[in-house]
Amino acid sequence: MTKYIFVTGGVTSSLGKGIISASLAKLLQARGYRVTIQKFDPYINIDPGTLNPYEHGECFVTEDGAETDLDLGHYERFLNTSTSQANNVTTGRIYQHVIARERAGDYLGKTVQVVPHITDEIKRRMRLLGETGEYDIVITELGGTVGDIESLPFIEAVRQLRWELGNNDSLVIHLTLVPYLAAAGELKTKPTQHSVKMLLEYGIQPDVLVCRTEHRIGHDIRKKIALFCNVNINAVIESADASSIYDVPLLMLKEQLDKTVLAKLKLSNKNEPDLENWKAFLGRIKNPTSEVKIGLVGKYIELPDAYKSINEAFIHAGAKNECKVTVKSIAAESIDKENVVEKLKGLHGVLVAPGFGERGLDGKITAIQYVRENNIPFFGICLGMQIAVIEFARNVLRLKGANSFEMDAKTKHPVINLMEEQKNIKNMGGTMRLGAYPCELKKGTKAAHIYGKARISERHRHRYEFNNKYLKQFEEAGMVASGINPDNNLVEIIELKNHPFFVAGQFHPELKSTVANPHPLFVNFVAASLAKAEKRK
Image 1 (tube, helix red, strand yellow):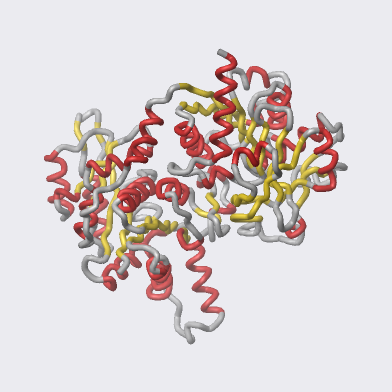
Image 2 (image 1 turned 45 degrees about the horizontal axis):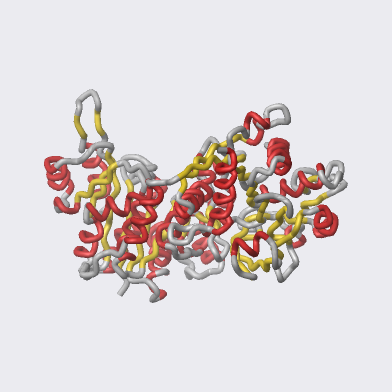
């Protein structure tokens, strides 16, 4: 029978529920259990697809085309298993489903209420993955903090579900903060006490407390927290700040979080976790033999979470190449022809990031022209590929005013055009080309060499595409379409023949990079940048 773990947060947001959930899942997986993680978000958007990255960080896309919370990226990177539509649920999706059923007459004239109708739908979705028979343990992370008005239906659903599941089949982990007051020179447990008290008011007694802290929590503090919060002292877990999120599984192992959880769920912990590969990965991160500096040119550089998967993919690729990847974020709109040399000075490679809209377009074009003409390794993702096409059209093919239909609907040369199936779409949410699509690689190309196979699958999130009317002109001038979708002939990858590394994809390779399987495009881009760094010595 599937066991359920619920992870709640208190005191403040951004304590790292996603990382704790992923770390616990990793430890349980390393002991041989089949584990998945799902995220329940309390906002009313159907999904994060229409949210500005400044609002919510990046939008993570799953294999089946769901636009989801960025925490699902952590789940995949840690567990090396794919998530799906079922792994991310929002208040908006819950209400949309219940209201659609009400309109269809499914409730037989009853008054539709938060309890039981909304909470029943939440519980149904909490059980969904567990009922597939594919998992021994399902971890459910609840977004927001206890006490938020929008989180109440989720908390109530957990209370009900725990009662229905019975003893030993579920537990609640509450992530809280134990702040250090410099003026007093001591750690304070009162925020944790208040947070747990609030959870108790909603009818939930946490089984395990994970305490985020900047300083070590001694025995006396643990004893005090255990006494006031009704938990065993061995269930008060310290989660100190770590230099890398990839340290957290080992820190939780040291704190015996996995053993505590297994004991409470009455599951065997005979198998010690196999973390040798994870430790080797950490060793390569912390002991690099060289360093490369890569520029990330984008629109949302003020918020690191806007390009979370890209930054993590660089860590994976750096470890594979045994080098430290230092990413320098550069605002696209700050680049012009006068300062481009200064802005890209000292960089061994440049990545132009995905995004939407024309802000920063000219800066990205200028940056790409510079790296193309100066043989600096270049990697373009989604919009980054499209802008590489626009730059080539303008400066090599001399197609005056060449542009994307997204930026200029009146351009004489729409080298990037709106996809045919997108032309009659009015709604914004969930209507792009989303999820995994196949791609066939041309023999003898850099892309084919990098992947080492003829057919691949990558995840997409876009509305615009390379305009095949111009393909012959591009290929005659040296820009090759090295990856093509076999079903509709869409260009998926472009590359330059006579360049050390100039590759761009219409898809998002960063979404598939994990600790166990760093993405080959990132690995090879970092390797090319490393070769550039060595040449400059």
